[in-house]
Image 1: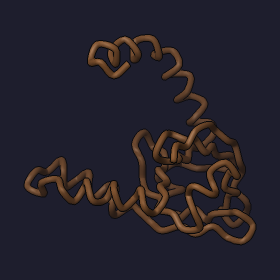
Image 2: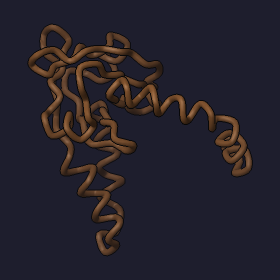
Image 3: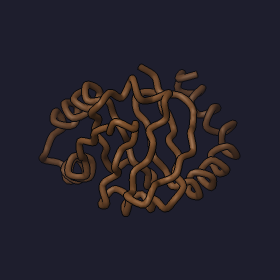
Length: 145
């Protein structure tokens, strides 16, 4: 499954957010949410998460960077369940990590969904949109495009 698009939602008073309909079926009733890169959260369907975790387990624990990254991703993970109204509760430690306030963005990024504070997402998008040509050129040089 490929996750695509971006959807703006608000956190309610109980810190729940409606999961975009476009993502509900593919994510399933239970999913795994963890700290992501660039101060967002990563959300994976259960079966995709198992593949990510398996890859991380294969890395050598003898290297400090590997241990640190595994701790960052794995210890920050939590299983999240969709309620009957299609909402998810974002755990407090993850809301704090991502700086989530009232308005959030769900962004589909291929194999995962990312959750961003809307203001942070807006600034991030501005920055990467300005760099898109340079990024494409670098990807072209290595044969990725």
